[in-house]
Structures are given as C-alpha cells and as structure tokens.
Amino acid sequence: MDTIGILSILENKPYNDVKKIWKIFETKYNSVGVQVFNHPSVTFQGGKVKNIKQLKKDFQKVISKIKPFEIEVNGYGHFNKKVIYLKVKKTNDLIKLNKLINQFSVIYCKDLFKYYTPKKWIPHITLAMDDLTEDNLEKAWNELSKNKVRFKQKLHNLCIVKWYPSGKIKIIKKYEL
Image 1: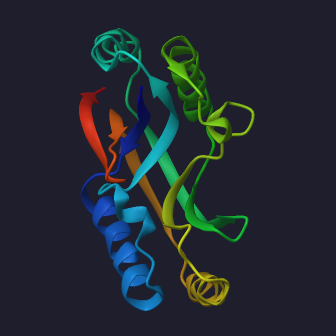
Image 2: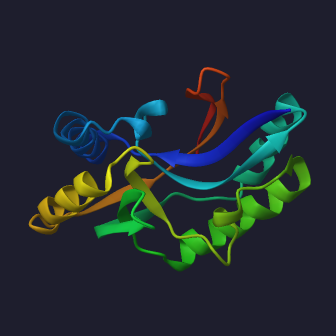
C-alpha cells in the first residue's frame, strides 16, 4: 500500500513568501523537516491506498464539482510545540471541501490521517515540524510574533501526493479547479 495525501499547493507570491520563511527556519533554527515536500500547501486528508491509478481517475470526477475560491491566511499557530504553522481561516468553502475530500478518502484509503477528519481538522500551512528544539521553537515563536502575516490566495488546484521510502513527498497528479 502507498501513502497518499490530498492537498492544495500555494502559488505565486504566497508560495515565494512561505519558501522564504522556510529558509529562515533552515538557516536560523536548523529546521528542514517541512522540506520533505517542496511546496507550501494546505492538506485536506490522506491515508494508505491500494490502487493509486483508480483513485486518480475517480478523484477527477469529484473535483469537477469544485469551483475555485479564496483562502485567507492570518497569523501563526503551533501544535504541541512541535509544529509551527500559518493559520488559514476556516471558512464554509474550506469546511465543505474538507468534508468532500474526507468522504472520498474513506472509500479509497485506510488509516486516514486522524487530525484531518472534519471534526479535528485545522487548516494550516506548515512552516516547521518535528525538528525544532524546545529552545529554537521558543526563539522562532518570539521572532514570528513580531511580524504580522496576512495574505489571500485563490485555491484553484488540488494535488495527490505520494510518500516515498526515501521520506520525500512528491506530487503525482495536479488537478486545476
């Protein structure tokens, strides 16, 4: 079985701005864990799948119902002092999309990502994960709190990504909405 995820990647200026923040985490705090996937993104769900080819084909039908919409990023957050992220405002459009992707994922995937189910999901864009020392997390958090972040981005793509044995994550199919 392969592990996949369903997400939307940032593009243009927001993509470049987040990549700059990743670079700061890498150089100042020796944090590169988030870079196992090369694209800043908002993840909706994932799990283990037997037939990626069929999943990709059937997902095309699901996304035909989805129209692009705007997401808004405003501020920072963290999960259990292990992950620092950009907060994505949880709008009705995002909630509906997360539910739709979860309904699809339940059919095709086993071992769904438990924190991405509709009741637990917090939309976000990860800046650093799993490799910050407690001291560096505190320093980074203090530095980030001095800088406000706010931008809007049209969500107009969904991607299926795959985890590889090397630890890398790569896009295997990108769909335009």
